[in-house]
Length: 215
Image 1: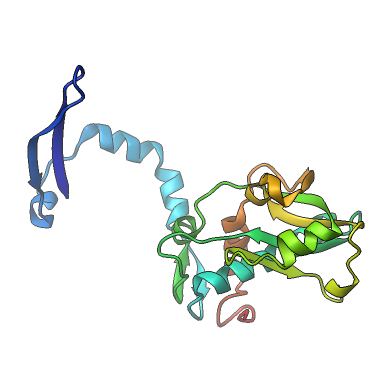
Image 2: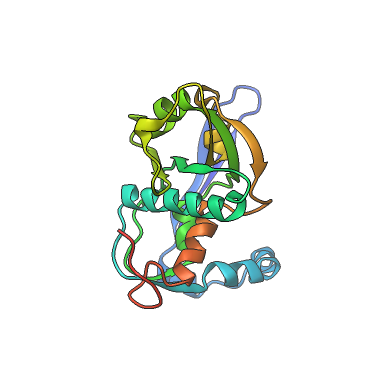
């Protein structure tokens, strides 16, 4: 652990280091418990336990792009299941970019692993969009961080520029004004991309047993 104390002159704004040192792992093991830290750990014990519970086993490594592609499929699947009887959902995805460590490793996976990859609480939403914007802003977007999945049997060649289409994205994509999306309905209060991915792993969809490995 690194430790540093910095003094700031409130008048001039000048900063100076007053103390700095490193705490080795051997020293750390022998330190007394810090009561305020213990209180915080106790307060969040249930959340910590949930975060580090093993969800399942991932049978192969997914790089950032492949994982985002799969999440886009999960958006489409979840949206079709929730809204398919009322709306013709043709697309799932949008701006999907993982964070460090970027790739999902093979092996046992916890919710904390997914939280590192997909940390943002962007709610999942059903939106409507014109055909021209569906093609240019979503399906044919050249930004490498845009990933999408279209429903089976849907041909992009048949998209009508003035037609209205229904898509499932998250609030980050929906609220980016240039995408020209109109939010129709929210999926729920607290399901995010990582939650759909966690459910898929728990169901064995990315493991060597209990489901098939997605490509």
